[in-house]
Image (cartoon, rainbow, N blue to C red; front, side, top):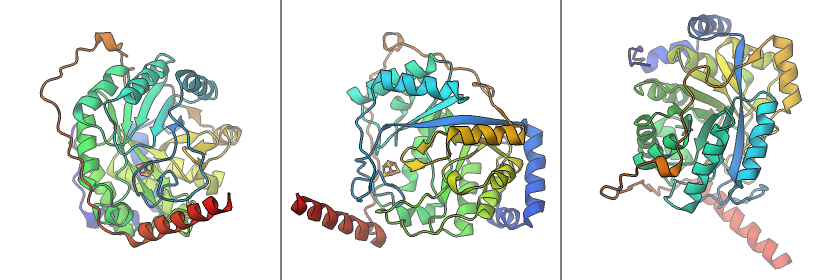
Length: 372
Ligand code: SF4
């Protein structure tokens, strides 16, 4: 993808987003058909290879150690566990496995070496491997690419302005830096966001503009609807209306015509009809499996039924790019060079809701301790 794409202004994107709905869907569907096969939808599986205990304060996330939620924490999964999960996902039609770890950033340690082994294992099963591991440096991104990662996911979440209302432990520029580091490798870029966190329509459109201005545009753009989880600062957010999801998918499709727009978290609240409109408007992928990292997702048989009803077929692996060759550690010439200085930011501004829920969590843990 070369950056020959149109540069969108906020006013133009708002006009697209706010168009009469059926007009918007028609326009997005027209763009979709110019660049994609509208009968194909990729099934991807998201696997949490290390769950919970994250040091960050993302206001939407049940995996942040500072909040008190019901998730089960897990150490890094073994190679056998990941191979079994990947083979099961493949047998049910998934062509991509996305492995997620609840880390702030990747560290050059034994756990990262193990993740590289997991990548090689899944690559050998002829599946697209995606990783979402937090911030990565250029050399870490290169190691992931050499191990056979096809896509690296790192979401912008929202507009730069609204990002400061949700997360205080890292800055927006860190996200962009990671995407830049990924782009310097053979890996493809997967980056999108979440709606329903209290942001304005303007924030949604600004995020799409930032994504569309990346050069080249991301190959993948996941659009998530917030799944409000008890114990997180966003537990009381209203569910996202399906119409907002359709508008967001359609607008993403129009401003990033060649990207695969992914209908991601929040599908349990969507009817088949609602999802059908999202596919019509340009969604080219769903995440399958009854859990998305830690939040609920439709059962696989329901998705297969929906595919059958709508006459959709799952996309084959590597339909949009070559399978990366996975190199063994001995084959990789590591240029130790001058040690990379990692300067990920830590803005540390106060987000009242995050602080409040951290205090609630502390009080709950204390009460649990006293009960024992
Ligand atoms: S979204 Fe990612 S970085 Fe943020 S708290 Fe959750 S696991 Fe950590």
